[in-house]
Length: 141
Figure (cartoon, rainbow, N blue to C red):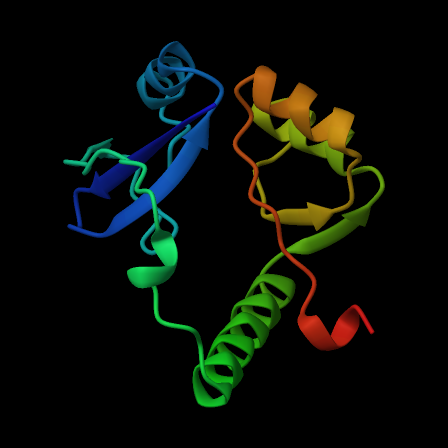
């Protein structure tokens, strides 16, 4: 897996994961890499800082306080509501529907659903761009 920082023609920056560099190149050439903000298909790699391991991350990262945690939960809730409002829930048919959309067998549309870890790996190996929608903290209890 490789993560790229990307920038669209509208100057929006975002990140995406790809199975390999070749997978990114193929998807970009096919116009399958899309800006999540403006849906532009004119996307290119952006400058990235390398991921450098440090011996003690606790000295660099402040511990989150209650206010920060509440803000993060609220933002996660807002993102989840927006995704749910703008996508079709296909449930456990997600892997099949994602493939059909990717291979242009059906009309392109935003979908969400469930997939096992093996199904997710298989989709990513095929170069199908998917993004996990994590459960909110209060949903896990």
